[in-house]
Image (cartoon, rainbow, N blue to C red; front, side):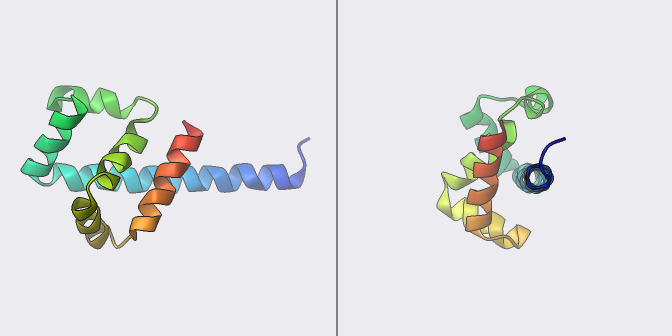
Length: 101
């Protein structure tokens, strides 16, 4: 049986990843709620509305959504105001998803 600390880290890591994925799903919903934002995201990611769902199942997709937000500071701040999150939370969520990919 693994040491108790190891079990707690796994549980905390799972909760952290779940939080990060939830934040990224919210970010994708935020992008999808505005036609111009969605079109720009799709154009820059090389996705289409038809391929978006399948892409969302790929490892690293949600980290990519957050990376997209982090690359545009003004969009990041609009999202953070919308989601009541801080830019630091987005950075943390991105790092969490990168580590667990």
